[in-house]
Length: 319
Picture (cartoon, rainbow, N blue to C red):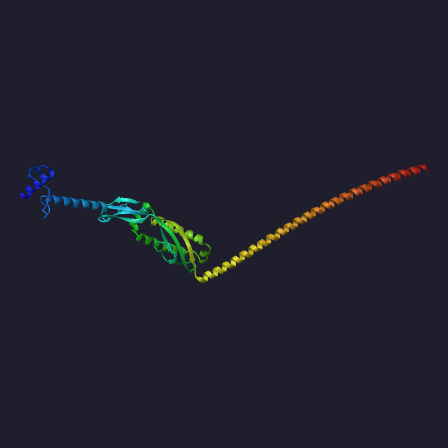
């Protein structure tokens, strides 16, 4: 046909020789493609190849997915609606254009229960104060915060159980509210005032256990910030605390006075002891002096008596 002759001539011009027919008169490639008006068959083939290449490039480019350094990710297929169990860390991966990454934070995430003015440092606003009751039935408002971090090797289990953000985060918040308000009922209002550190540790331990065993995350930086009790009770507690501090000051002053008096007594006893020992020494010295004088006087008297006796004997002999 005229079309085939034109094609062969074009082939000769491009390749420098005559085009070779396929064996057994087989149809040439693209024979079934109708010619585009105003465009040669070769240009049509070239355009088709370019379109195919462009589509391939687009498929390849759009098939890549990236995971930030602050994230974990799971590979989700939008065709099968299934998720790969592997946890992807930061990097760039080819996952095909029909897949997408389900992302989870790899860094610490804060949950905070407090007034809105205390949440200026949070990128995501926290919850309001926790409202509960003490063991003795008084209302208590608690301000606290903690951070959680999802375990990398349990991201798939978390997704299967609770889904992606914000679903799992909402479950975390609801469980924290439930556990913390329940824990508050185990303590009296007075204990909240006097044993806040102990109560905070107990709450943290309960949350840590629940998150690690059930929610595939770890707890960090638990802080029990403030505990607000009814004003009347707080006033009474403050007054009691003032009286208790006054009592402690009085006891401290009493102890100081007692120590001072005891010190004075000890010093007086030591001075008395020194004087007594000095008196004993002086008395002993006087006694020694008197004894020596007496012994000397007696010796003199004996000597005088002996002399008188000798004189008397001599006088009697003469008579």
